[in-house]
Length: 224
Image (spheres, rainbow, N blue to C red):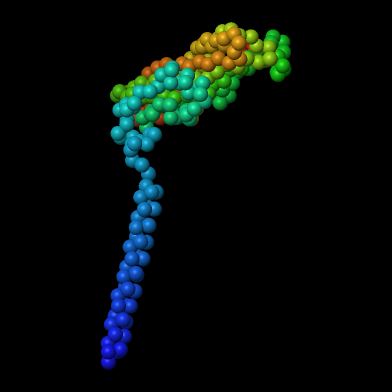
């Protein structure tokens, strides 16, 4: 009788433990599933662009400056978009791909790699935006470098640049020319430059900052 009572008690405890471990397994699965769901949720704020509603009025941090861009170009650090946090509806600013480089040769030797005097490169771009009814106040900046070629000599070079204002599809609306002096000091083979400018973009109807884009690129020069 004593044995039968112990056996019955043991069976009751076995049922209890089976029930306990089953509940534990279910809870563990729920916790794991919950963690995956939370991890897959998009961030609603605090990211690079954050919420459009929270950041539509202006940027929170103004870090875009010639010194910031110049340091980034010299050290070759930070992706373009991290140089200046921008509002979600801010007009995009990028380097015009076909104008990223400008190579200048000795007169009459265009295309000869041994006749290169210097080569310009655009390496960084960033922007900030502030908004008023009907207007986007865009602050944009870019940086780059000039490298001497086999026929190059130290000095100051005026790099011709174009600023393009386009629609959202990349069709030019307005183009501005500018020249940036870049100095390569004696004993050096490279010089750096950075530029920060402002542009007011008028908006009509339902347009936003995303209705336009701004690009920078080197202007092609006649080297015939």
